Amino acid sequence: MFQQFLVVAGLSSATYMLIALGFTLIFGIMRVVNFAHGEFLLIGAYAVFVAQHQFGLDYLVALPLAALVAGGIGVVAERALFRRFTGDETGGMIVGLALAIAIKGAVTILFGVDSQPIARPFSGSIEVAGAFIPRDQLFAAGVALVMVALIWWLLNHSRLGLAMRAVAQAPEVARLQGITPWKTYPVAFGIGCALAGLAGALVAPIYGAEPNMGEAALMKAFIIVVLGGLGSIPGALVASCLLATIDSGISILFNATIAALVSFAAVILVLLVRPAGLLGRS
Amino acid sequence: MRLELQEVSIRHGAIAAVLGVSLTVESGTVAAILGANGAGKSTIMRGIAGLVPLHAGRILIDGRAIENLPTEQRIRDGIALSPEGRRLFPEMSVHDNLVCGAYLRRDQTGVRADLDKVYALFPRLAERRNSLGRNLSGGEQQMAAIGRAVMARPRLLLLDEPSLGLAPAVIHVMANAIRRIAATGVTVLLVEQNSHLALSLSKTGHVLESGRLVRSAPAAELLADADLKRAYLGDDPLALESLAASPPPV
Image 1: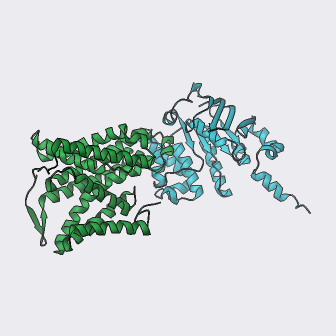
Image 2: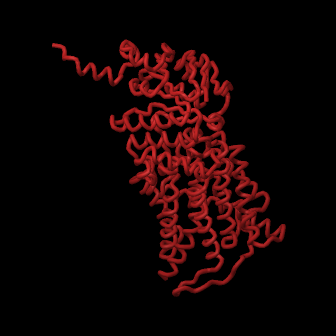
Image 3: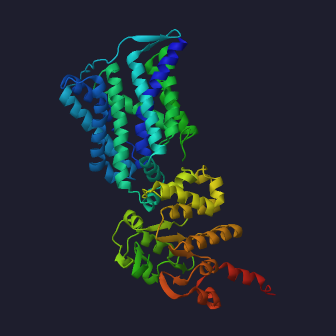
């Protein structure tokens, strides 16, 4: 059973990282708490559904398309809505909340409240050291980890990443280097939303696509970034593993409700003891 | 690059921080703006860089008006500012801070060569190239801030208080570096409270008092003018030294 726990914890860590990375990236660069982050995950999941059922596309084709659709909608949302609330954290949160409700409502009107089935790209599982690893979940975790590594590389070794870090740390000084924050924001927001969309497309074959999946994802992202420190990418990665371990461990030992209870208790504890998060700076 | 300010006024809300300042810095020369704390020196620098809007007046570089251009475009046009308080990117290494200064440049070989030049100019930075900005000492931060501005390969370099809060030995390093940078032909405008240092580096000095330009003269003339220090340059280190040297009142 311990091996199975490690497998579940490892697989959830990767997906959690993907969801939280986009969330913390957007906050770190724009100081916007994107309350619609979960709904971009929703968009990714339904994009796969539409691609499969309306256009008959293969899952592996639908997957990058779903990320692009979510990213594209993210860019539009930044330019049309979030831009005017840059630096205004409360305003950004309220706009995010409104956008989340609007997207969820639109999805419910279009597709109904029932869970939509997504064809699994892989089936069966492989056995490693007495633990069963479902192939579809292994694929999802693998893609998630590759994306996390790609974003890490992008931030630390590309010109775009340099601009994003500069804008995140000191927007005015970034302008003195010739970097235009107004051009960096939509790119960062789009990338963050694309990551959420990709996460949605990755979990859709496992859990199906349904209108409430965004809320659950937002809660996970929220717990993770509070634990790790808002805006801190290493913090988000570490906290993803932590939450995945708590979640899967307690779910296996007791049940999922107690796991949720414990993770929020951990959030309260961290906020009391270390308000900036484990790796955050106040 | 020739810089010309024409009747520049800048307001902070209802307060006039800079009032009708006109001055010219000839291409390839070093000029200094002197004045006490709060005289409006940094505000002028921020105005030239486009970080604060002008209330009135014009800013010309090589005869071309730039006062309505956004900051990014002014940087593109060859202006670089090492801002007051250094303002390094705190979570970036020294190396990345310097590379950020060259953000607009596409000549990768030239950027690498200039990196080596900055490290040669400030050997201390080469030792600390992987340290984060927030972990540097004040002097190292100042070196990195000047280095970052130089990395843009500017034609007009604005240095805001490069000696502020530094130990005398570090000020000496900074002065030598500024001399060497100026020798490459870049136009330099320097803002300083340390008037002796600034004037020793400059060809021309401009004295600012409460936002108004009260005197513009060759640096040598201002250096020789003892009244000037007493009148306008409140906390001048030399004035303090001479004060300390005089016998205490009985």
